[in-house]
Image (cartoon, rainbow over all chains, first blue to last red):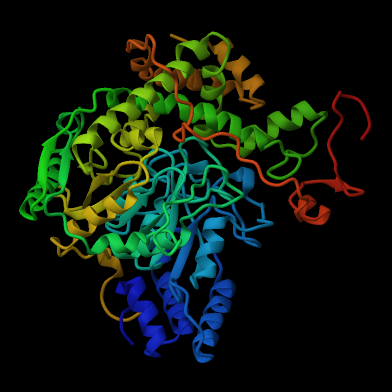
Length: 499
Length: 100
């Protein structure tokens, strides 16, 4: 049997359709890979072999009966542990939800399963998605499959590492300030945050409600596009989900279709201010320059773009994010669900002890920060201006996209760092400096690996940003650029032979 | 310095996080550092700029038809509660010293 670790969504689906292998064999191969690599990587918080083999048997039965196979038929898939899947734990990598069992399934997960995906389990993350390294997971960090002494990025670190280690073909993550794109870059995989509203957040534990978006991670742009085709769309249970423009047949145009177009004649924006920012490593600039040269070689025209207010995006993000988190995390009251401190004398003591023990320090810091920033007087100094800055950032992007079709820039100022290397929370927050502005403005962006850094030897990604709701343009640029690189997305520990 | 240790204790009380005494000093330093990093927000000329509270600025209330739909059963809704009794969530006294 061939090495399924390196197979794409299309190859798995075709292999099952032609009878080259069964979905059950794919599921078995995935759990064999997990058994071999997970002890080193620790990407999973829960494995669900029963659910995966059930789904595999359903796919194999459908094929045997001559039925239609779903677009993700037989694809081994796993989900960030802030996404509900009925009957599994959804912990958000927090003691607060350690014993929580999902009574229902998130829309993005349900759509994946309806499309035939095999649910392997739930993936590690920073606690409640607050972090950039998975070091705040109370269940221990995930290790970067490219170098086990380094972080996989975060907060969707488990989602990126599982793909890079060949343990899942596709995963879902969530991105509030870069939490899909930065780990994708650190682990050398493709990760996309679609425009706000493209994917329903119903059943995904909320962090920053005006910023959060769900998106796929995979080895290739085609895998990410195929998954986005499945999970996108309006959902009556998330009022921010959007009805995307319908094609002539009344169905939304498939994101995958964008991959076939070339980029000749496209105008690509470059942002010199990002490259000159403090703390940016030369090797990530070199990787970006290489990618831009390739795009030019493909006939795209490079245009320098100024985003004058994006300098304030970090500050706006660290105002808006904590304020929304403070509000969202008030639901953890130790009564209806979540950790409860036993033996409290009264309700007040139960609240305080349960939340003190249930939340880790980064989570507690963000809740307290949000509470402070929304307090009387302080609101006018930070929260309201942050929302005014959001207007200016949206205008910056609108002006940029009047001149160009997409922006191509940095994902992160550097490649994956070592565990414990960044202990100061303010320094850790800078990890998101190039990604937060698209969450604030609501447009989509993707991280594409473009090889290994000249100095670190670790994967480096570039970020492709598109206009709001024109996510196909992002995928089009990403696919064209991807074709210029011969880069193995599987980390060395996952290579070599059959599963 | 934006926040004193007393401010941090007050915020912890308000957010119902029982911050242990030995952590107050470190959290005060961290929060002050983070707030210092938010300074750029206060330095822009924002005169006359309208705020945008949401990336879907044009979104108005989204309503559905007022028709009852099935939800979680009582049993399912109580399944994750640390304590329940007679089909209801069980909590300690609201005021100290009372009964159940």
